[in-house]
Image (cartoon, rainbow, N blue to C red):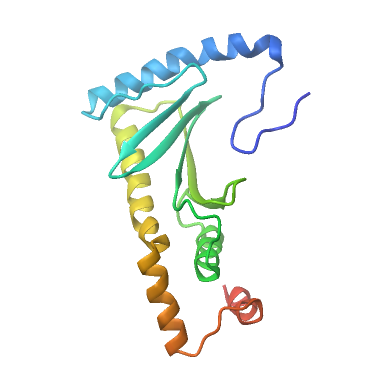
Length: 175
């Protein structure tokens, strides 16, 4: 038995890969049809069940996996995540008011991921799901912009807050 890949579903043994891809093809085509029905741009999935959707200057990566549609978007291409943003990301995951999870991928980049079940998914639900995800990314992406980070550093300096591991521990405990 193979191990689970970090961002994918349980991998099939080599003999079953062809069958797995064929099983995903109707789902991929169904998702594309749903997108077209609701006026979205076509979702062109590759033979691995993956698709990239360009939205307002960033990419949303979609992947069909078993009975779910998974989405991921990078929030920054910098592998250094400022401590205050990491605390905010962890806090968002902790309060879990939505179905989005903030992570750092293997390369260290901050990202947001989510998934939805494919059973009974219609065009309206798909469009709403992608739109909600887009809003989350648009809300968080500017926080990683260099100007935003400089502004935050200046504010912390004015308030006398230093950005060290010791000063963040009490903050983490409060959340």
